[in-house]
Image 1: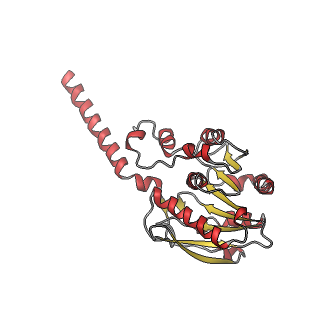
Image 2: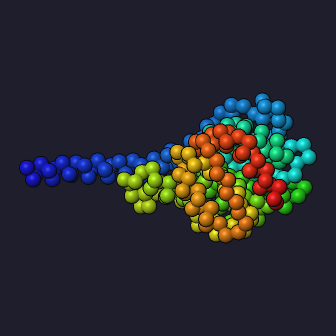
Image 3: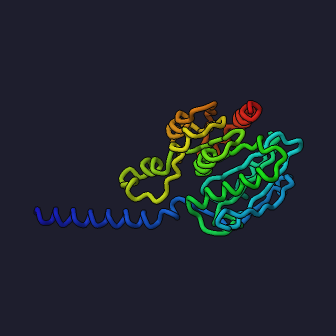
Length: 269
């Protein structure tokens, strides 16, 4: 009987180790969900735009759209989440345009028409390329706002730690990828096998710009509590906008309350 139990325990241990190994080797596919095909453009919702091609410090081509608003008061660098590409963010482009903001939205390496392959440093490099482009091309660099949603929020926090935007919007953003892993996979030794950090919590104390944190109480992917922890770690002028709905549609479900919250923050700058 004992030998059978030991044998069974050995099989379970082998299976667990094999599973952990597969997860370790598959992390890129668990973190990034890029789509290459551009399904629509801002023109399809009546927004004129310019195709923009940037280059990271390592020479990777980054594709984006510059969507201008009439009498724009701000310029937003939009950093999207880990799935799809810029063509899946037309609702956000419309909202920002209605608020009177020019918007540069970019795709990370491996997404849409951008070159290269996804990776943590690669996403940071793309964000910095977008920032540098705006600093060089907008009339008033002092009115640039960095806006990151979900994974893009962690990238925005990294960027805001290194540059000085007029404001930062962190929407549906987690504290770190390790914390996300522990939440969704409590049975895995996440800290031991994680190959990506996206540690927004460590970046937060160094962000001196005003910050608006936005998070849904019903977020089924990034727990509301992680958004609160990240917000609490911010040292300076900050505000919190609680919305409702899911991770991917909270800003649409909340509607006018969401838009009004963004407007108040922008006007406070």
